[in-house]
Length: 360
Image (cartoon, rainbow, N blue to C red; front, side, top):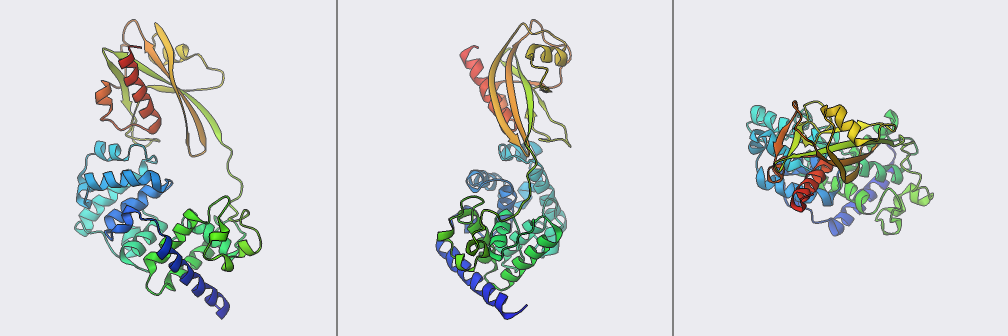
């Protein structure tokens, strides 16, 4: 490298560290160097906003304060603690990794980057984040926030997902953290923090940015163009009917099997319906082999999973006799509170409890 990029990089590192020292948010996982606590925060923060994660992180560390506790916890407990965070594969991998740490590392979180990277559910970014934040190692990180910051500062016009551009970004991240004069933890966190607070995806606050004088996108008025993420996949609409079948104050629920979306979580019986099949009574009869005596729409929940836009319509059902064959178990509203549901079906559980109280 010639001297000019080095000069820019050294100025960039100094400005980021000064800005972070004065502007870093007081987040609970920043008050510790415990690699377990930092690891849990990094897994929770994947695809999830900081304000959402904070209460989940606090509760997790209170209930499972050690790696050993996480490794030994029942599946029902880890899913209940994760309830509402989504992307539940994360918590199952977290427990698998905790079990590996107990078995192979005597319960002590490994400090070597390669050993951290080898743990289930930990990729290159997460391993770099843990090693730099917990152990102050010069390991690079590259998440969505850092990609946005670096593509704008260095004017990288190519799609960061492309192999060459992605390799260039990793190299830049590595050069910066290695040039942090031993402040590896704060340097990496400053890049993430700048992306979260200032260098936003839309309407970035460039005038408040500590590195605007070093930013190619700011100088060339290209902040809205970068990063060049290409076209997003079009959203797909999906519709589901759920059935709140009640008997003697209890509701029928079932547990999703392993290997599917929201595996191991609980749900009310439901079925996906196409555009031409809109009669809930007919869908219920197909599913249970019974014609409902009474059916009424109780609540509609709209939510998104990746590129899917889902409408979940929940119906209160009365039948003359119970179905002879049902998959699931009957639970009271109090018992439902002990089960781990997806966010959408948790709302249905709340609606089910209210329907009992109202005598609907």
